[in-house]
Length: 93
Image (cartoon, rainbow, N blue to C red; front, top):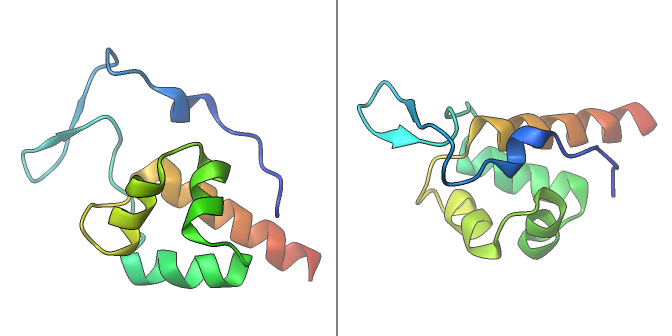
């Protein structure tokens, strides 16, 4: 599994300010550009299942499941970490 230091912005608490999104809803994170299909593909490329990705990202398995199934938008910092892991994997090939 690629090793990436977890950025501090993944450890936001519920007391952190919410950032408004264009759709008028609020989220603790800005929304990234990764689709559920792209995340599912990334899991395969990284050789990880949803449980492993949840542990790696320090989020719940339910969160990963909702992202993969397209039930929730994937937070921008999560997209960035997955992209970084893919880039590291590609660099080692």
